Every structure is written in structure tokens, then in C-alpha cells.
Length: 477
Image (cartoon, rainbow, N blue to C red):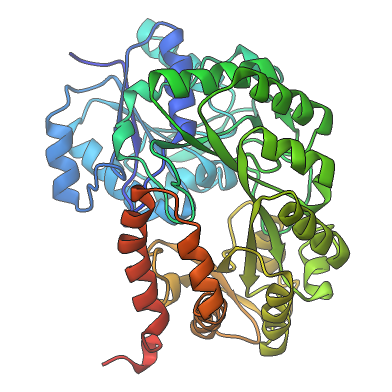
């Protein structure tokens, strides 16, 4: 049966696919508006090659409209999808959207010559209007939040305002996606089935590395009652037993957070969960309530142990706040993950050592060392292109020439005093230093709670260990 709309999540070689909640939200809204929708998650289905994608598309009746999600890291995979769509479905209207398109609306269609239109910003209302006009035969030019061509020139509609009341949105159309294929890496996945969830949009903070091209700076949240409805559906309909909240700052509104936690306790769902938030948005009493409501781990953006570098990224969190949050989280009986970054403007070997020492002193349960990626639309992207940081330069980064265990995608990096290759080697050294300590490894093994985690450890642990112990890329034969 031919669908009005086909939504596609591009492929990736990352072995831990997650539900594309943005596409699921779009699918639900358009479906509620009366249009038939199909979804294809090439990442979850491990469709890596162009021929695999084409073969899969040949088994789908031609849709009226096809929409492809584009993130900067999956740019190459998205281009492959669009090329395949144009070949297999020559008469289908092809749309591109997502963070990359929203961050670079003036050039996005130039990067995708086979695409017909682009969608920038929050997409539900825009996509629904496009579908209505396609069905009615109306003109597609001039729609708010869209890009289109006129005689080869890209034109841009007025920005569409954000949705202020998120409760008007239907629950994400998870039923259109292969839910059994989604999982995560350690330390997540204590219980099966694991799923990701988002309860808010927008972030008012001004971290320089973050792009807010889709949801913007305006914080909006689903009501606690609505969140509980969604979680109940996940636990009853899909038998989900573990959630990770991917909100930028789950605890930003303390009053809302307390109400949500109290409702979660009252609901008595068979569910454990983890979240990400800022060190200045928690306190000991709140953390105790989170623990009571089923939380088992909190992740914090520590970023750097150097105060000047944290100021450079406008983090707005000082050392004492980080130390207090980590200490209180542990005291409340929760696990802690620290997100750490190498490659900020001004980074040197000495500042990296400072961050390693700071991580040792904090002693979180887990760390995630990342080499800084410059995302289009972020303050860093514009500042670096404008030459704000002197001799530093933007480079196309193939994930360290293979020096990352999970990334193989198109990235944009920054080189200052350290080369990208050296940054990846330092990240590997720092990870090795943190995890390959006898006491730390024993604590991780003791933290395993299920057979699924043992399976994950065998799968991703060996991959990571091989990466940690292998020589740098420039020393390999």
C-alpha cells in the first residue's frame, strides 16, 4: 500500500542504534492529521551500502513524499539515501530536514541537489502543511520553515514559531519503527527493554559548542501528567523496563521535576531510568527523590578541569559546583557519568592533564572522553570561521583517522596547539588511564545487573579494549 509519507533515518556504523524520536514525533503528528506514514530506519536495519539501501527501497511502494533526517555526522549517509530515493522513486517529492539543514539553511539544498525542498526548525507544523498542500495540489513555495528552489536559486520561507504547548503533540509513533532493534552501550541497558525518551525541548543556556538549530533557546516541557502517560505506554505496550531521558537539562525546572518524580513514584511503573543534567541544577534532596523515583544514574557535562577553558565555552558552572553535584549524587546512592572534552580552543597537553587529574579527583563511576566536534549552528562554529581564536583552523575530521571506537562519520574539528590525531590519542590515553585500573574494572563488573549487560560487555567492551590498547593510527602497519 502506497503511503503519503516515508520518513527515513540514515545509516550509521555505530553499533548501538537508538529510536529516532524526532522522526517518530513527526510521524505521529502527520498521521494524526490524516496522512498515511511509513518509516525506514537504515541505522537500526544496518543498511550500510548504497545497494542495500536501494534494495530495501525497491520493496516499498512509491510514496508521495519522502523525508530524510540530516545530522552533520550522518551527512554522507543522508546524501546516499537521497541519491537512492531519487533513482528508485523519480516522481516522489524529496524533503531534507533536521539539525544540519536547520543550522545551514542557506546552503543545505546545494549539498543535496537531488532533494526538492528543505525543512528548518521544529518540523511538525511545517511537514503537516506540506503534506496537505501535496494532497490538494497547492503551491509548495512560501511555506513557513521551508527551503525551495526557483530557477536554481534557493529561497527561504519565514521561520516558523516553536510549539509552546508540547502537550498538543501526540505520543511518538514508535509503532512504525523496529523497536526490538534499539539498544544502547554500557553502562546503559541494565534492564531489557531499554528505550530513550525526551520530555522537553529547547535549552536557555549558552554553551558555545552546542547547536540549537531545531528547538532553539526557548525551554518548553511536556506536563508531568503527560510524561507519565507516555511512560505508562512504554512500560505496558512495549514492555520497556529502562529509560534514558535525553533532555538537555531534565531538572531545569525544579518545581516541574519534583511533580514529575512524585507522580512517577505514585504510578509504580516497573521502570528504572537515567538522565543528563547540569551540575548547578541539582541538590541533595532532589537527588534523593530521583533515587526514590527509580533513577540509577545521572550524567553531567564536566567538559574540562581547567577553569579558563570552561569559561571559553560559556559553561557557567564552576569547579565547586561540579564537585558538590558529583559528591551529592554519590551520597544519594546514584551512579555518576562525567562527560569530558579534549580540543577546546586554548587546549594544550597541560590542560588535558589538568582534566585527567580533575576526573581522578571526582572519581565518577563512568567517564566519556570526547574530542570536540564543531557543530554548524553553534557559537563555536561561527566564532571559529570568523577567526576569533587566532591560528586555529576548522578541519574535516574523519574521526581521528580511525582513532575512535564508535565514530566513522563526517565531523568538523578544530586544530589549535594540538592536532586532531594527537587529541584522539590523548582521549584514548585518558580513557585507558581511567578504566584500566584494577579497582575501577572490579567496580564496573560488580555493577552488572543482567545477562543483557554481560552481552553488551562482551560486544562493546572488547571493541573498546582493542581500541585502547592498539597503537596510534600513524604507527600502524
